[in-house]
Structure formats: structure tokens, C-alpha cells
Image (cartoon, rainbow, N blue to C red; front, side, top):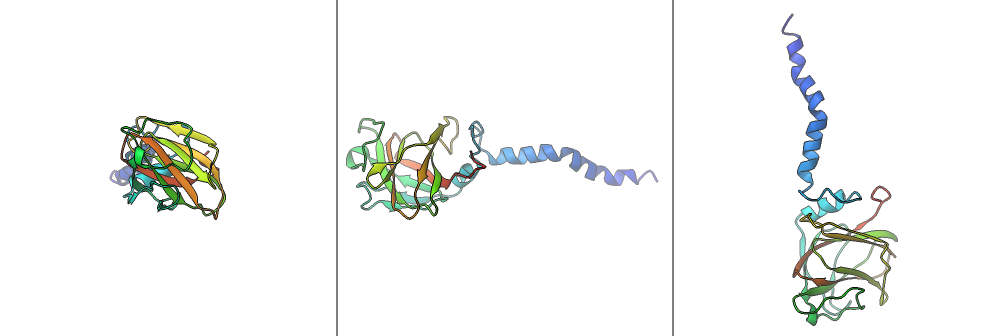
Length: 185
């Protein structure tokens, strides 16, 4: 009879430790330094942690810009800023020397709010029909190795949009575009 209660010890141990195990599993999936954002960016962090598709960003507006798709992670190679003809004047500028820029073309599947996420410090503009789309919100983090900045825009479906990246001190940048859901805000 005394052996009967000991059969349940492993089960009890799992039940009492379940929250600790879940917390440990979650922390293993969030890189160190990436837990300080004010909104839930777990989807963006998961996508940025995946193997990115390598692309060369365009140098002349929509002509020749690489096409990207929302919800996919890209490693974009930017060009020396002096060699890039930006589609619109950025609201913030840096000297050409030592900085990189580039443009990527994309479409969104449905009209709504979208988030552009990048891995390094740079300026982000979305251009629609030759005009910059107003920024709705943004957030930055200095300690996250995957995600440095996110900027949100209201975008219209069925149109070629231009993602303009400028003022980067890094030649390569991880970039992705995701739809913002009510759970993200």
C-alpha cells in the first residue's frame, strides 16, 4: 500500500512545475534583450529569427527595386547612399558618407494597418504614388539583436508601394512587413 502514492510523484511534479517550464520555454524563444517592447512583437521576432531571403535593395525608386512579400523575413543589401536616388526626401537625413540606402517594392493583401520592422538603425518611409505615407506609430529597442525599430502605417491593398530605407550605418538590414492585428496593439 505504501508504494501507491509514489506512482503519482512524477505527475505531481509536472503539475506543480508547469508554469515554470512554460516560462522557461518562452524565455528560450525570446532573444536576450528583446523583451522590453511595449507591444507584443513576438510574431515579428519569430519571423526575424528565421532564415531570411537575401535580396539587393533597389537604387532608383520603383524601377528595379526588389519585390518583397509581407510576413517574410528578408536580408536586404543596401547601396552606398550617394548612389541611391530616393523616391521622396526622407523626413530625417544623414550625410552620404558612411551611410547606406535602398528601396523595396511590395503590396499588401488587404487594406489596413501594417508594421515595418528592421534590425538596424535607419529611417523608414513607405511611398504610395510618389508621396510618403504618414507614420501612425513607432517603437525602437537598442538591446534587441533582431529588432531595432518598428514603424506602423495605414496601407492600401492592390497597389505597388515602395519601402524606402535610408541613413543606415550598416550595409545589410533584416526587414519584414506584417499586418497589425487588434491583438498586437
